[in-house]
Length: 392
Figure (cartoon, rainbow, N blue to C red):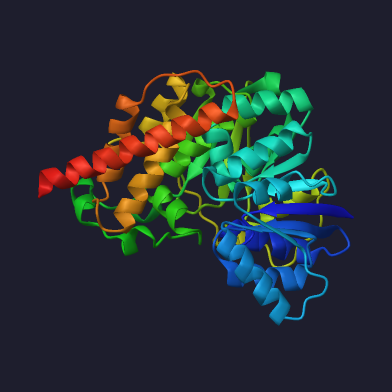
Protein backbone atom coordinates (compact mmCIF):
# COMPACT_ATOMS: atom_id res chain seq x y z
CA UNK A 1 0.00 0.00 0.00
CA UNK A 2 1.48 3.31 -1.11
CA UNK A 3 0.55 6.34 1.04
CA UNK A 4 0.17 9.49 -1.06
CA UNK A 5 0.27 13.21 -0.28
CA UNK A 6 -1.40 15.38 -2.91
CA UNK A 7 -0.81 19.09 -3.47
CA UNK A 8 -3.52 20.77 -5.54
CA UNK A 9 -6.19 18.20 -4.77
CA UNK A 10 -9.16 20.27 -5.97
CA UNK A 11 -7.64 21.14 -9.37
CA UNK A 12 -8.14 19.14 -12.55
CA UNK A 13 -5.06 16.93 -12.09
CA UNK A 14 -5.72 16.57 -8.37
CA UNK A 15 -9.29 15.38 -8.87
CA UNK A 16 -8.24 12.91 -11.55
CA UNK A 17 -5.39 11.64 -9.37
CA UNK A 18 -7.88 10.87 -6.63
CA UNK A 19 -10.08 9.13 -9.19
CA UNK A 20 -7.15 6.94 -10.26
CA UNK A 21 -6.25 6.10 -6.65
CA UNK A 22 -9.89 5.35 -5.90
CA UNK A 23 -9.89 2.83 -8.76
CA UNK A 24 -6.91 1.05 -7.17
CA UNK A 25 -7.87 0.88 -3.48
CA UNK A 26 -5.50 -1.99 -2.75
CA UNK A 27 -2.56 0.03 -4.05
CA UNK A 28 -3.06 3.54 -2.65
CA UNK A 29 -4.16 5.37 0.46
CA UNK A 30 -4.53 9.15 0.70
CA UNK A 31 -2.32 10.42 3.50
CA UNK A 32 -2.53 14.18 2.95
CA UNK A 33 -4.39 16.75 0.83
CA UNK A 34 -3.57 20.40 0.16
CA UNK A 35 -5.75 22.83 -1.78
CA UNK A 36 -6.24 26.55 -2.25
CA UNK A 37 -9.62 28.19 -1.86
CA UNK A 38 -12.03 25.46 -3.03
CA UNK A 39 -13.01 24.53 0.51
CA UNK A 40 -16.35 22.91 -0.35
CA UNK A 41 -14.69 20.49 -2.79
CA UNK A 42 -11.84 19.83 -0.36
CA UNK A 43 -14.34 18.98 2.38
CA UNK A 44 -15.97 16.40 0.12
CA UNK A 45 -12.56 14.89 -0.62
CA UNK A 46 -11.66 14.70 3.06
CA UNK A 47 -14.92 12.96 3.94
CA UNK A 48 -14.41 10.42 1.15
CA UNK A 49 -10.68 9.72 1.46
CA UNK A 50 -10.06 10.35 5.20
CA UNK A 51 -6.54 11.85 5.04
CA UNK A 52 -4.63 12.45 8.25
CA UNK A 53 -3.36 15.87 7.12
CA UNK A 54 -5.12 18.66 5.23
CA UNK A 55 -4.17 22.20 4.27
CA UNK A 56 -5.99 25.16 2.72
CA UNK A 57 -4.73 28.39 1.26
CA UNK A 58 -5.85 30.64 4.10
CA UNK A 59 -6.64 30.60 7.82
CA UNK A 60 -10.25 31.49 7.01
CA UNK A 61 -10.41 28.52 4.67
CA UNK A 62 -9.03 26.23 7.36
CA UNK A 63 -11.69 27.40 9.81
CA UNK A 64 -14.43 26.89 7.23
CA UNK A 65 -13.11 23.42 6.41
CA UNK A 66 -13.18 22.43 10.07
CA UNK A 67 -16.80 23.64 10.36
CA UNK A 68 -17.84 21.68 7.29
CA UNK A 69 -16.17 18.50 8.53
CA UNK A 70 -17.83 18.81 11.94
CA UNK A 71 -21.18 19.32 10.22
CA UNK A 72 -20.51 16.13 8.27
CA UNK A 73 -19.88 14.37 11.61
CA UNK A 74 -16.38 13.35 10.57
CA UNK A 75 -14.59 11.80 13.53
CA UNK A 76 -11.73 12.08 14.07
CA UNK A 77 -10.94 15.33 12.29
CA UNK A 78 -7.68 15.45 10.32
CA UNK A 79 -4.88 17.80 11.28
CA UNK A 80 -5.76 21.02 9.43
CA UNK A 81 -3.14 23.57 8.40
CA UNK A 82 -3.10 26.56 6.08
CA UNK A 83 -0.82 28.72 3.96
CA UNK A 84 2.82 27.97 3.22
CA UNK A 85 3.36 26.14 6.50
CA UNK A 86 0.33 23.92 5.92
CA UNK A 87 1.23 22.88 2.39
CA UNK A 88 4.80 22.15 3.47
CA UNK A 89 3.51 20.01 6.33
CA UNK A 90 1.51 17.90 3.86
CA UNK A 91 4.38 17.66 1.36
CA UNK A 92 7.02 16.62 3.86
CA UNK A 93 4.94 14.28 6.01
CA UNK A 94 7.18 11.37 6.96
CA UNK A 95 4.29 8.90 6.69
CA UNK A 96 3.73 9.64 2.98
CA UNK A 97 5.58 7.45 0.48
CA UNK A 98 4.85 9.57 -2.59
CA UNK A 99 4.10 13.23 -3.25
CA UNK A 100 1.91 14.27 -6.18
CA UNK A 101 2.84 17.88 -6.87
CA UNK A 102 -0.13 19.30 -8.79
CA UNK A 103 -0.67 22.70 -7.18
CA UNK A 104 -1.06 25.54 -9.67
CA UNK A 105 1.57 28.29 -9.57
CA UNK A 106 4.67 28.82 -7.48
CA UNK A 107 2.70 28.16 -4.28
CA UNK A 108 3.67 24.48 -4.54
CA UNK A 109 7.33 25.09 -5.38
CA UNK A 110 8.90 25.50 -1.89
CA UNK A 111 6.95 22.57 -0.46
CA UNK A 112 7.88 20.30 -3.36
CA UNK A 113 11.52 21.37 -3.05
CA UNK A 114 11.53 20.52 0.66
CA UNK A 115 10.03 17.10 -0.07
CA UNK A 116 12.73 16.44 -2.68
CA UNK A 117 15.44 17.49 -0.22
CA UNK A 118 14.09 14.89 2.18
CA UNK A 119 14.35 12.22 -0.50
CA UNK A 120 10.62 11.76 -1.09
CA UNK A 121 9.48 10.29 -4.41
CA UNK A 122 7.64 12.90 -6.50
CA UNK A 123 5.08 12.58 -9.29
CA UNK A 124 5.27 15.99 -10.92
CA UNK A 125 2.43 17.93 -12.55
CA UNK A 126 3.32 21.40 -11.24
CA UNK A 127 5.09 23.08 -14.16
CA UNK A 128 6.55 25.87 -12.04
CA UNK A 129 8.80 23.42 -10.19
CA UNK A 130 10.98 22.87 -13.26
CA UNK A 131 10.14 25.92 -15.37
CA UNK A 132 10.94 28.45 -12.63
CA UNK A 133 13.51 26.47 -10.67
CA UNK A 134 14.77 23.65 -12.87
CA UNK A 135 18.45 24.04 -12.09
CA UNK A 136 17.96 24.35 -8.33
CA UNK A 137 15.44 21.51 -8.13
CA UNK A 138 17.38 19.04 -10.27
CA UNK A 139 20.52 19.63 -8.23
CA UNK A 140 18.55 18.87 -5.07
CA UNK A 141 17.08 15.75 -6.66
CA UNK A 142 20.54 14.47 -7.61
CA UNK A 143 21.84 15.09 -4.09
CA UNK A 144 18.90 13.25 -2.55
CA UNK A 145 18.79 10.48 -5.15
CA UNK A 146 15.19 11.33 -6.04
CA UNK A 147 13.63 10.44 -9.38
CA UNK A 148 10.89 12.81 -10.51
CA UNK A 149 8.19 11.00 -12.47
CA UNK A 150 6.31 13.27 -14.90
CA UNK A 151 2.52 13.38 -15.01
CA UNK A 152 2.16 15.66 -18.05
CA UNK A 153 1.06 13.49 -20.96
CA UNK A 154 3.94 14.67 -23.17
CA UNK A 155 6.66 14.00 -20.62
CA UNK A 156 5.06 10.75 -19.57
CA UNK A 157 5.19 9.74 -23.23
CA UNK A 158 8.90 10.59 -23.47
CA UNK A 159 9.59 8.70 -20.24
CA UNK A 160 7.90 5.64 -21.71
CA UNK A 161 9.62 5.94 -25.09
CA UNK A 162 13.06 6.25 -23.51
CA UNK A 163 12.61 2.80 -22.02
CA UNK A 164 13.20 1.52 -25.58
CA UNK A 165 16.85 2.63 -25.57
CA UNK A 166 19.48 4.37 -23.47
CA UNK A 167 20.25 8.07 -23.16
CA UNK A 168 23.52 7.84 -25.10
CA UNK A 169 21.51 6.73 -28.15
CA UNK A 170 19.20 9.77 -28.05
CA UNK A 171 19.08 12.12 -31.04
CA UNK A 172 16.07 14.27 -30.15
CA UNK A 173 12.84 14.52 -28.22
CA UNK A 174 9.73 15.55 -30.16
CA UNK A 175 6.87 17.08 -28.19
CA UNK A 176 3.50 17.17 -29.91
CA UNK A 177 1.10 20.12 -29.69
CA UNK A 178 -2.53 20.10 -30.77
CA UNK A 179 -2.30 23.67 -32.03
CA UNK A 180 -5.20 24.65 -29.79
CA UNK A 181 -8.37 26.44 -30.88
CA UNK A 182 -6.56 28.91 -33.16
CA UNK A 183 -4.57 26.49 -35.30
CA UNK A 184 -6.52 27.57 -38.38
CA UNK A 185 -7.14 31.18 -37.32
CA UNK A 186 -5.28 33.77 -39.46
CA UNK A 187 -2.73 35.80 -37.50
CA UNK A 188 -4.51 39.05 -38.33
CA UNK A 189 -7.70 37.78 -36.64
CA UNK A 190 -6.09 36.99 -33.28
CA UNK A 191 -6.57 40.55 -32.01
CA UNK A 192 -10.30 39.89 -31.83
CA UNK A 193 -10.43 36.47 -30.17
CA UNK A 194 -12.28 36.27 -26.86
CA UNK A 195 -11.50 34.42 -23.63
CA UNK A 196 -14.39 32.03 -24.34
CA UNK A 197 -12.84 31.14 -27.69
CA UNK A 198 -9.41 30.65 -26.12
CA UNK A 199 -10.90 28.38 -23.46
CA UNK A 200 -12.54 26.10 -26.06
CA UNK A 201 -9.71 23.62 -26.43
CA UNK A 202 -10.52 21.02 -29.11
CA UNK A 203 -9.06 17.98 -27.33
CA UNK A 204 -8.41 18.49 -23.62
CA UNK A 205 -10.43 19.68 -20.62
CA UNK A 206 -8.10 21.58 -18.29
CA UNK A 207 -7.92 24.58 -15.97
CA UNK A 208 -8.40 28.09 -17.34
CA UNK A 209 -4.79 29.24 -17.33
CA UNK A 210 -3.34 26.09 -18.86
CA UNK A 211 -6.05 26.14 -21.54
CA UNK A 212 -5.11 29.68 -22.56
CA UNK A 213 -1.44 28.67 -22.41
CA UNK A 214 -2.26 25.86 -24.82
CA UNK A 215 -3.91 28.36 -27.16
CA UNK A 216 -0.74 30.53 -27.20
CA UNK A 217 1.61 27.49 -27.13
CA UNK A 218 3.22 28.98 -24.01
CA UNK A 219 2.40 25.71 -22.34
CA UNK A 220 4.41 23.86 -24.99
CA UNK A 221 7.28 26.23 -24.28
CA UNK A 222 7.04 25.33 -20.61
CA UNK A 223 7.14 21.66 -21.57
CA UNK A 224 10.28 22.20 -23.63
CA UNK A 225 11.97 23.70 -20.56
CA UNK A 226 10.71 20.86 -18.35
CA UNK A 227 11.98 18.26 -20.83
CA UNK A 228 15.41 19.86 -20.74
CA UNK A 229 15.64 19.20 -16.98
CA UNK A 230 13.69 15.94 -16.73
CA UNK A 231 15.65 14.16 -19.43
CA UNK A 232 18.99 15.99 -19.30
CA UNK A 233 18.58 17.08 -22.92
CA UNK A 234 20.19 20.05 -24.63
CA UNK A 235 17.97 22.79 -26.11
CA UNK A 236 18.90 21.60 -29.62
CA UNK A 237 17.63 18.10 -28.84
CA UNK A 238 14.03 19.21 -28.18
CA UNK A 239 11.60 19.84 -31.04
CA UNK A 240 7.89 20.65 -31.21
CA UNK A 241 5.47 19.59 -33.94
CA UNK A 242 1.74 20.29 -34.28
CA UNK A 243 -0.32 17.11 -34.18
CA UNK A 244 -4.02 18.11 -34.15
CA UNK A 245 -5.43 14.74 -33.06
CA UNK A 246 -3.39 14.56 -29.79
CA UNK A 247 -3.14 10.80 -30.30
CA UNK A 248 0.66 10.69 -30.30
CA UNK A 249 1.66 12.37 -27.06
CA UNK A 250 5.37 12.62 -27.85
CA UNK A 251 8.17 10.83 -29.68
CA UNK A 252 11.82 9.97 -29.19
CA UNK A 253 14.19 9.74 -32.13
CA UNK A 254 17.31 7.64 -31.63
CA UNK A 255 20.65 8.10 -33.34
CA UNK A 256 20.02 5.28 -35.85
CA UNK A 257 16.93 7.07 -37.16
CA UNK A 258 14.42 4.91 -35.29
CA UNK A 259 11.48 6.82 -33.78
CA UNK A 260 9.49 5.50 -30.84
CA UNK A 261 6.12 7.15 -30.23
CA UNK A 262 3.62 6.79 -27.41
CA UNK A 263 -0.05 6.81 -28.42
CA UNK A 264 -3.18 6.94 -26.33
CA UNK A 265 -6.56 8.65 -25.91
CA UNK A 266 -6.38 12.28 -24.72
CA UNK A 267 -7.18 11.45 -21.10
CA UNK A 268 -4.93 12.56 -18.22
CA UNK A 269 -5.83 9.57 -16.10
CA UNK A 270 -3.54 7.41 -18.24
CA UNK A 271 -0.28 9.29 -17.51
CA UNK A 272 -1.38 9.81 -13.91
CA UNK A 273 -1.77 6.06 -13.40
CA UNK A 274 1.55 5.41 -15.16
CA UNK A 275 3.36 7.78 -12.78
CA UNK A 276 1.67 6.37 -9.68
CA UNK A 277 2.25 2.70 -10.50
CA UNK A 278 5.67 2.91 -12.19
CA UNK A 279 7.54 0.65 -12.89
CA UNK A 280 4.42 -1.52 -13.10
CA UNK A 281 1.60 -1.19 -15.60
CA UNK A 282 -1.86 -2.01 -14.30
CA UNK A 283 -5.12 -2.57 -16.17
CA UNK A 284 -7.38 0.44 -16.68
CA UNK A 285 -10.90 0.15 -18.09
CA UNK A 286 -12.47 2.52 -20.59
CA UNK A 287 -9.32 3.49 -22.49
CA UNK A 288 -8.76 2.28 -26.03
CA UNK A 289 -7.99 3.65 -29.47
CA UNK A 290 -10.20 2.97 -32.46
CA UNK A 291 -7.54 2.04 -35.01
CA UNK A 292 -10.06 1.92 -37.85
CA UNK A 293 -10.82 5.64 -37.47
CA UNK A 294 -7.34 6.87 -36.63
CA UNK A 295 -5.71 9.72 -38.51
CA UNK A 296 -2.29 11.17 -37.76
CA UNK A 297 -1.47 14.62 -39.15
CA UNK A 298 1.61 16.73 -38.48
CA UNK A 299 2.43 20.38 -39.18
CA UNK A 300 5.32 22.70 -38.36
CA UNK A 301 4.71 25.37 -35.73
CA UNK A 302 4.13 28.78 -37.40
CA UNK A 303 6.43 31.07 -35.42
CA UNK A 304 4.55 34.26 -36.31
CA UNK A 305 1.28 32.91 -34.91
CA UNK A 306 2.80 31.38 -31.78
CA UNK A 307 5.61 33.72 -30.61
CA UNK A 308 5.38 32.47 -27.01
CA UNK A 309 7.08 29.21 -27.98
CA UNK A 310 10.04 31.19 -29.30
CA UNK A 311 10.12 33.31 -26.15
CA UNK A 312 10.24 30.13 -24.06
CA UNK A 313 13.15 28.81 -26.09
CA UNK A 314 14.95 32.13 -25.65
CA UNK A 315 14.39 31.98 -21.88
CA UNK A 316 15.64 28.39 -21.72
CA UNK A 317 18.85 29.19 -23.60
CA UNK A 318 19.52 32.34 -21.55
CA UNK A 319 18.84 30.51 -18.29
CA UNK A 320 19.17 32.23 -14.93
CA UNK A 321 15.97 34.04 -13.94
CA UNK A 322 14.42 34.17 -17.43
CA UNK A 323 12.47 30.88 -17.34
CA UNK A 324 11.09 31.95 -13.96
CA UNK A 325 10.21 35.37 -15.38
CA UNK A 326 8.56 33.71 -18.38
CA UNK A 327 6.21 31.79 -16.11
CA UNK A 328 5.42 34.73 -13.83
CA UNK A 329 4.81 37.19 -16.67
CA UNK A 330 2.59 34.68 -18.46
CA UNK A 331 0.45 34.14 -15.37
CA UNK A 332 -0.12 37.88 -14.97
CA UNK A 333 -0.78 38.37 -18.69
CA UNK A 334 -3.20 35.44 -18.96
CA UNK A 335 -5.18 36.73 -15.97
CA UNK A 336 -5.39 40.13 -17.69
CA UNK A 337 -6.56 38.50 -20.93
CA UNK A 338 -9.23 36.48 -19.12
CA UNK A 339 -10.31 39.71 -17.40
CA UNK A 340 -10.58 41.37 -20.82
CA UNK A 341 -7.84 43.88 -19.98
CA UNK A 342 -5.44 42.58 -22.62
CA UNK A 343 -5.93 41.33 -26.19
CA UNK A 344 -4.80 37.81 -27.01
CA UNK A 345 -1.55 38.84 -28.80
CA UNK A 346 -0.77 41.09 -25.82
CA UNK A 347 0.11 38.01 -23.77
CA UNK A 348 3.26 37.46 -25.81
CA UNK A 349 4.02 41.19 -25.85
CA UNK A 350 3.91 41.47 -22.05
CA UNK A 351 6.11 38.38 -21.68
CA UNK A 352 8.66 39.77 -24.12
CA UNK A 353 8.86 43.09 -22.30
CA UNK A 354 9.37 41.38 -18.94
CA UNK A 355 12.11 39.12 -20.32
CA UNK A 356 13.88 42.16 -21.78
CA UNK A 357 13.72 44.07 -18.49
CA UNK A 358 14.39 41.23 -16.08
CA UNK A 359 17.61 41.78 -14.08
CA UNK A 360 20.11 38.94 -14.34
CA UNK A 361 20.90 36.94 -11.21
CA UNK A 362 22.18 33.52 -10.18
CA UNK A 363 19.90 30.95 -8.62
CA UNK A 364 21.50 29.15 -5.71
CA UNK A 365 18.59 28.83 -3.28
CA UNK A 366 14.84 28.41 -3.66
CA UNK A 367 14.48 31.88 -2.10
CA UNK A 368 16.32 33.32 -5.13
CA UNK A 369 13.64 31.81 -7.37
CA UNK A 370 10.83 33.33 -5.31
CA UNK A 371 12.51 36.76 -5.41
CA UNK A 372 12.82 36.56 -9.20
CA UNK A 373 9.20 35.46 -9.47
CA UNK A 374 8.05 38.47 -7.46
CA UNK A 375 10.16 40.88 -9.53
CA UNK A 376 8.84 39.46 -12.81
CA UNK A 377 5.26 39.83 -11.60
CA UNK A 378 5.97 43.43 -10.63
CA UNK A 379 7.37 44.14 -14.08
CA UNK A 380 4.38 42.45 -15.74
CA UNK A 381 1.88 44.52 -13.74
CA UNK A 382 3.89 47.63 -14.57
CA UNK A 383 3.78 46.77 -18.28
CA UNK A 384 0.01 46.21 -18.13
CA UNK A 385 -0.47 49.58 -16.45
CA UNK A 386 1.70 51.24 -19.09
CA UNK A 387 -0.36 49.68 -21.88
CA UNK A 388 -3.63 50.71 -20.28
CA UNK A 389 -2.43 54.26 -19.75
CA UNK A 390 -1.38 54.45 -23.40
CA UNK A 391 -4.82 53.30 -24.57
CA UNK A 392 -6.66 55.76 -22.34
